[in-house]
Amino acid sequence: MNKTSNDFGIGTSYSKLILIGEHSVVYGKPAIALPFPTIEAKSEVFGMNGPIMMESPYYSGLLSEIPDMLIGISACILETCKLLNKPQEGFLIRISSSIPIGRGLGSSAALAIAIVRSLFSFYKLPIDEKLLMHLVHNAEKYAHGNPSGIDMFAASSEHPIWFQKKKPIIPLHIQDPFYVVVGDSGRVGDTRTAVESIREKYIAEPSRTENSINLLELYTYKAKEALLIGDATTLGEMMNLAQKELVLLGVSDQGIDYLVDVALQEGALGAKLTGGGRGGCIIALANSIEHARIVSKQLKKAGANQTWYFQFGLDRGE
Image (cartoon, rainbow, N blue to C red):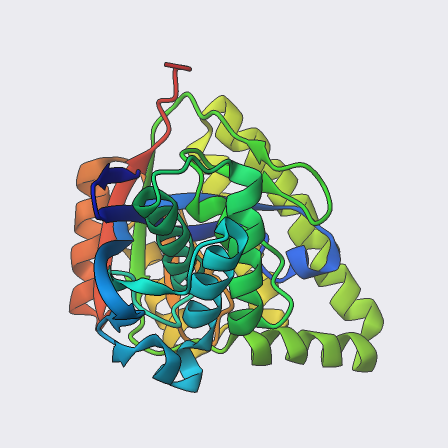
Protein backbone atom coordinates (compact mmCIF):
# COMPACT_ATOMS: atom_id res chain seq x y z
CA MET A 1 0.00 0.00 0.00
CA ASN A 2 3.01 2.28 0.08
CA LYS A 3 4.74 3.94 -2.87
CA THR A 4 7.77 6.18 -2.82
CA SER A 5 9.55 8.75 -4.94
CA ASN A 6 12.27 11.23 -4.06
CA ASP A 7 10.13 13.50 -1.92
CA PHE A 8 6.76 11.81 -1.80
CA GLY A 9 5.09 9.08 0.22
CA ILE A 10 1.64 7.56 0.18
CA GLY A 11 -0.32 5.24 2.46
CA THR A 12 -3.87 3.93 2.31
CA SER A 13 -6.16 1.94 4.56
CA TYR A 14 -9.55 0.27 4.29
CA SER A 15 -12.51 1.03 6.45
CA LYS A 16 -13.79 -1.76 8.71
CA LEU A 17 -17.04 -3.45 9.69
CA ILE A 18 -17.88 -5.49 12.75
CA LEU A 19 -19.89 -8.44 11.55
CA ILE A 20 -20.82 -9.63 15.02
CA GLY A 21 -19.59 -9.25 18.60
CA GLU A 22 -19.58 -5.49 19.10
CA HIS A 23 -20.04 -4.46 22.75
CA SER A 24 -19.50 -8.01 24.06
CA VAL A 25 -15.90 -7.62 22.82
CA VAL A 26 -15.46 -4.96 25.53
CA TYR A 27 -15.97 -7.74 28.11
CA GLY A 28 -13.33 -10.05 26.68
CA LYS A 29 -15.64 -11.92 24.32
CA PRO A 30 -14.70 -12.54 20.67
CA ALA A 31 -15.85 -10.52 17.69
CA ILE A 32 -15.60 -10.94 13.93
CA ALA A 33 -14.59 -7.93 11.86
CA LEU A 34 -14.15 -7.39 8.14
CA PRO A 35 -12.03 -5.03 6.08
CA PHE A 36 -14.44 -2.78 4.17
CA PRO A 37 -12.62 -2.26 0.85
CA THR A 38 -15.33 -0.14 -0.79
CA ILE A 39 -14.23 2.97 1.10
CA GLU A 40 -10.77 3.99 2.25
CA ALA A 41 -8.54 6.66 3.75
CA LYS A 42 -5.45 8.03 1.98
CA SER A 43 -2.49 10.04 3.21
CA GLU A 44 0.10 11.68 0.94
CA VAL A 45 3.31 13.30 2.15
CA PHE A 46 5.17 15.92 0.10
CA GLY A 47 8.61 17.28 0.97
CA MET A 48 8.76 21.04 1.58
CA ASN A 49 10.66 23.52 3.70
CA GLY A 50 9.34 24.79 7.00
CA PRO A 51 7.01 23.45 9.69
CA ILE A 52 4.64 20.56 9.09
CA MET A 53 1.56 21.58 7.14
CA MET A 54 -1.66 19.67 6.79
CA GLU A 55 -4.42 19.63 4.19
CA SER A 56 -7.62 17.70 4.86
CA PRO A 57 -11.41 18.01 4.56
CA TYR A 58 -11.47 18.77 8.30
CA TYR A 59 -8.64 21.32 8.66
CA SER A 60 -5.89 22.89 6.58
CA GLY A 61 -2.95 24.82 8.00
CA LEU A 62 -0.07 24.41 10.40
CA LEU A 63 -0.07 21.09 12.23
CA SER A 64 0.83 22.98 15.40
CA GLU A 65 -2.51 24.82 15.20
CA ILE A 66 -4.71 21.78 14.56
CA PRO A 67 -8.07 21.93 16.39
CA ASP A 68 -8.60 19.78 19.47
CA MET A 69 -11.01 17.44 17.68
CA LEU A 70 -8.12 16.33 15.42
CA ILE A 71 -5.44 16.07 18.09
CA GLY A 72 -5.20 12.32 17.54
CA ILE A 73 -4.05 12.90 13.95
CA SER A 74 -1.42 15.36 15.14
CA ALA A 75 -0.23 12.93 17.81
CA CYS A 76 0.03 10.17 15.22
CA ILE A 77 2.19 12.28 12.90
CA LEU A 78 4.49 13.56 15.63
CA GLU A 79 4.90 10.20 17.35
CA THR A 80 5.81 8.56 14.04
CA CYS A 81 8.45 11.22 13.36
CA LYS A 82 9.81 10.75 16.88
CA LEU A 83 10.02 6.99 16.54
CA LEU A 84 11.79 7.34 13.18
CA ASN A 85 14.18 9.89 14.69
CA LYS A 86 13.19 12.38 12.00
CA PRO A 87 12.69 16.15 12.44
CA GLN A 88 9.14 17.28 13.07
CA GLU A 89 9.22 19.56 10.05
CA GLY A 90 9.89 19.56 6.32
CA PHE A 91 6.72 18.15 4.81
CA LEU A 92 3.08 18.69 3.89
CA ILE A 93 0.67 15.88 4.70
CA ARG A 94 -2.52 15.70 2.63
CA ILE A 95 -5.32 13.52 3.98
CA SER A 96 -8.43 12.38 2.16
CA SER A 97 -11.06 9.84 3.09
CA SER A 98 -14.34 8.48 1.79
CA ILE A 99 -15.11 6.96 5.21
CA PRO A 100 -17.92 8.80 7.03
CA ILE A 101 -16.85 9.96 10.49
CA GLY A 102 -18.60 8.66 13.58
CA ARG A 103 -20.50 5.82 11.91
CA GLY A 104 -18.71 2.86 13.48
CA LEU A 105 -16.67 2.24 10.34
CA GLY A 106 -13.24 2.77 11.88
CA SER A 107 -12.51 6.15 10.31
CA SER A 108 -10.01 7.24 12.97
CA ALA A 109 -8.09 3.95 12.81
CA ALA A 110 -8.04 3.99 9.00
CA LEU A 111 -6.72 7.56 8.96
CA ALA A 112 -4.00 6.70 11.47
CA ILE A 113 -2.93 3.62 9.48
CA ALA A 114 -2.79 5.63 6.25
CA ILE A 115 -0.75 8.40 7.95
CA VAL A 116 1.81 6.03 9.46
CA ARG A 117 2.21 4.14 6.20
CA SER A 118 2.65 7.37 4.26
CA LEU A 119 5.38 8.67 6.58
CA PHE A 120 7.33 5.40 6.40
CA SER A 121 6.89 5.55 2.63
CA PHE A 122 8.13 9.16 2.56
CA TYR A 123 11.29 8.20 4.44
CA LYS A 124 11.67 5.04 2.32
CA LEU A 125 11.55 2.75 5.34
CA PRO A 126 9.78 -0.60 5.72
CA ILE A 127 7.19 -1.04 8.44
CA ASP A 128 6.12 -4.24 10.12
CA GLU A 129 2.62 -4.91 11.44
CA LYS A 130 3.62 -4.78 15.12
CA LEU A 131 5.16 -1.32 14.82
CA LEU A 132 2.23 -0.07 12.73
CA MET A 133 -0.25 -1.23 15.37
CA HIS A 134 1.80 0.36 18.17
CA LEU A 135 1.70 3.77 16.51
CA VAL A 136 -1.96 3.51 15.51
CA HIS A 137 -3.01 2.38 19.00
CA ASN A 138 -1.49 5.55 20.45
CA ALA A 139 -3.50 7.66 18.01
CA GLU A 140 -6.68 5.68 18.70
CA LYS A 141 -6.47 6.51 22.40
CA TYR A 142 -7.34 10.11 21.52
CA ALA A 143 -10.44 9.00 19.60
CA HIS A 144 -11.76 6.28 21.89
CA GLY A 145 -10.04 6.61 25.27
CA ASN A 146 -9.24 2.92 25.75
CA PRO A 147 -9.80 1.25 22.37
CA SER A 148 -10.16 -2.53 22.13
CA GLY A 149 -7.95 -2.52 19.02
CA ILE A 150 -10.47 -4.23 16.76
CA ASP A 151 -10.77 -1.22 14.42
CA MET A 152 -7.08 -0.96 13.66
CA PHE A 153 -6.52 -4.70 13.22
CA ALA A 154 -9.53 -5.08 10.90
CA ALA A 155 -8.68 -1.98 8.86
CA SER A 156 -5.11 -3.19 8.30
CA SER A 157 -6.08 -6.75 7.39
CA GLU A 158 -6.72 -8.30 3.98
CA HIS A 159 -9.03 -10.91 5.56
CA PRO A 160 -11.88 -11.08 8.07
CA ILE A 161 -10.46 -11.47 11.56
CA TRP A 162 -11.36 -13.23 14.79
CA PHE A 163 -10.59 -10.70 17.52
CA GLN A 164 -10.45 -11.15 21.26
CA LYS A 165 -8.73 -8.83 23.72
CA LYS A 166 -5.26 -9.91 24.82
CA LYS A 167 -5.28 -12.88 22.45
CA PRO A 168 -3.62 -13.35 19.06
CA ILE A 169 -5.54 -12.03 16.06
CA ILE A 170 -6.70 -14.92 13.87
CA PRO A 171 -7.28 -14.28 10.14
CA LEU A 172 -10.37 -16.12 8.90
CA HIS A 173 -9.81 -17.58 5.45
CA ILE A 174 -13.31 -17.80 4.01
CA GLN A 175 -13.62 -20.08 0.99
CA ASP A 176 -17.20 -19.27 -0.05
CA PRO A 177 -18.64 -15.93 -1.14
CA PHE A 178 -20.78 -13.85 1.20
CA TYR A 179 -22.58 -10.69 0.13
CA VAL A 180 -22.77 -7.72 2.46
CA VAL A 181 -24.83 -4.53 2.35
CA VAL A 182 -24.04 -1.52 4.53
CA GLY A 183 -26.55 1.26 5.19
CA ASP A 184 -25.52 4.53 6.78
CA SER A 185 -28.23 6.10 8.91
CA GLY A 186 -26.61 9.49 8.37
CA ARG A 187 -26.45 10.01 12.12
CA VAL A 188 -23.25 10.06 14.12
CA GLY A 189 -23.12 7.21 16.60
CA ASP A 190 -21.88 7.67 20.14
CA THR A 191 -19.75 4.66 20.97
CA ARG A 192 -18.48 5.99 24.29
CA THR A 193 -22.00 6.69 25.57
CA ALA A 194 -23.26 3.34 24.31
CA VAL A 195 -20.41 1.45 26.02
CA GLU A 196 -20.95 3.38 29.24
CA SER A 197 -24.69 2.70 29.16
CA ILE A 198 -24.02 -1.05 29.12
CA ARG A 199 -21.61 -0.68 32.05
CA GLU A 200 -24.40 1.08 33.96
CA LYS A 201 -26.85 -1.64 32.95
CA TYR A 202 -24.41 -4.24 34.26
CA ILE A 203 -24.59 -2.57 37.67
CA ALA A 204 -28.36 -2.10 37.65
CA GLU A 205 -29.31 -5.44 36.05
CA PRO A 206 -26.24 -7.70 36.30
CA SER A 207 -27.92 -11.04 35.58
CA ARG A 208 -29.89 -9.85 32.55
CA THR A 209 -26.97 -7.91 31.09
CA GLU A 210 -24.52 -10.76 31.57
CA ASN A 211 -26.98 -13.09 29.83
CA SER A 212 -27.03 -10.81 26.78
CA ILE A 213 -23.23 -10.61 26.70
CA ASN A 214 -22.95 -14.39 26.94
CA LEU A 215 -25.51 -14.89 24.17
CA LEU A 216 -23.57 -12.49 21.94
CA GLU A 217 -20.51 -14.63 22.56
CA LEU A 218 -22.43 -17.80 21.62
CA TYR A 219 -23.77 -16.22 18.43
CA THR A 220 -20.27 -15.07 17.49
CA TYR A 221 -18.89 -18.60 17.77
CA LYS A 222 -21.78 -19.96 15.68
CA ALA A 223 -21.26 -17.18 13.12
CA LYS A 224 -17.60 -18.20 12.81
CA GLU A 225 -18.59 -21.81 12.16
CA ALA A 226 -21.10 -20.67 9.53
CA LEU A 227 -18.50 -18.53 7.78
CA LEU A 228 -15.98 -21.33 7.61
CA ILE A 229 -18.44 -23.82 6.05
CA GLY A 230 -20.16 -21.30 3.77
CA ASP A 231 -23.51 -21.40 5.59
CA ALA A 232 -25.04 -17.99 4.85
CA THR A 233 -28.45 -18.94 6.28
CA THR A 234 -27.05 -19.69 9.74
CA LEU A 235 -24.83 -16.62 9.62
CA GLY A 236 -27.89 -14.49 8.92
CA GLU A 237 -29.76 -16.10 11.81
CA MET A 238 -26.89 -15.30 14.17
CA MET A 239 -26.88 -11.69 13.00
CA ASN A 240 -30.62 -11.42 13.70
CA LEU A 241 -30.26 -12.96 17.16
CA ALA A 242 -27.35 -10.64 17.94
CA GLN A 243 -29.45 -7.62 16.95
CA LYS A 244 -32.17 -8.68 19.41
CA GLU A 245 -29.64 -8.66 22.24
CA LEU A 246 -28.20 -5.31 21.15
CA VAL A 247 -31.74 -3.90 21.24
CA LEU A 248 -32.21 -5.29 24.77
CA LEU A 249 -28.89 -3.73 25.78
CA GLY A 250 -30.17 -0.36 24.60
CA VAL A 251 -27.53 0.38 21.96
CA SER A 252 -29.81 0.20 18.94
CA ASP A 253 -32.35 2.94 18.30
CA GLN A 254 -35.47 3.60 16.27
CA GLY A 255 -33.62 4.70 13.13
CA ILE A 256 -31.31 1.68 13.15
CA ASP A 257 -34.23 -0.67 13.86
CA TYR A 258 -36.11 0.76 10.89
CA LEU A 259 -33.24 0.18 8.45
CA VAL A 260 -32.80 -3.36 9.83
CA ASP A 261 -36.51 -4.02 9.20
CA VAL A 262 -36.28 -2.65 5.65
CA ALA A 263 -33.36 -4.96 4.86
CA LEU A 264 -35.19 -7.98 6.27
CA GLN A 265 -38.36 -7.12 4.35
CA GLU A 266 -36.26 -7.14 1.18
CA GLY A 267 -35.19 -10.70 1.95
CA ALA A 268 -31.88 -10.11 3.72
CA LEU A 269 -30.71 -13.28 5.47
CA GLY A 270 -29.76 -11.21 8.49
CA ALA A 271 -29.35 -7.58 9.52
CA LYS A 272 -28.03 -5.74 12.55
CA LEU A 273 -26.26 -2.62 13.68
CA THR A 274 -22.50 -2.54 13.17
CA GLY A 275 -20.20 -0.67 15.53
CA GLY A 276 -21.25 1.26 18.60
CA GLY A 277 -24.86 1.83 17.63
CA ARG A 278 -27.15 4.74 18.61
CA GLY A 279 -26.75 6.00 15.07
CA GLY A 280 -24.11 4.89 12.63
CA CYS A 281 -24.65 1.99 10.23
CA ILE A 282 -26.35 -1.34 9.75
CA ILE A 283 -24.93 -4.41 8.04
CA ALA A 284 -27.13 -6.86 6.13
CA LEU A 285 -26.40 -10.23 4.52
CA ALA A 286 -27.73 -10.86 1.01
CA ASN A 287 -27.93 -14.12 -0.92
CA SER A 288 -26.21 -12.86 -4.11
CA ILE A 289 -24.52 -9.75 -5.43
CA GLU A 290 -27.66 -8.88 -7.37
CA HIS A 291 -29.76 -9.29 -4.23
CA ALA A 292 -27.26 -7.08 -2.39
CA ARG A 293 -27.76 -4.41 -5.04
CA ILE A 294 -31.54 -4.57 -4.53
CA VAL A 295 -31.30 -4.38 -0.73
CA SER A 296 -28.87 -1.48 -1.06
CA LYS A 297 -31.28 0.36 -3.35
CA GLN A 298 -34.22 -0.17 -1.00
CA LEU A 299 -32.25 1.05 2.02
CA LYS A 300 -31.45 4.23 0.10
CA LYS A 301 -35.14 4.66 -0.77
CA ALA A 302 -35.99 4.16 2.91
CA GLY A 303 -33.79 7.09 3.90
CA ALA A 304 -30.29 5.69 4.35
CA ASN A 305 -27.79 8.47 3.80
CA GLN A 306 -25.41 6.21 1.87
CA THR A 307 -25.31 2.52 1.01
CA TRP A 308 -22.61 0.16 -0.20
CA TYR A 309 -22.46 -3.52 -1.07
CA PHE A 310 -19.64 -5.94 -1.76
CA GLN A 311 -18.58 -9.56 -1.72
CA PHE A 312 -16.05 -11.14 0.60
CA GLY A 313 -14.75 -14.67 0.79
CA LEU A 314 -13.54 -16.95 -2.02
CA ASP A 315 -10.17 -17.11 -0.28
CA ARG A 316 -8.39 -20.03 -1.89
CA GLY A 317 -5.08 -19.32 -0.17
CA GLU A 318 -3.63 -17.68 -3.28
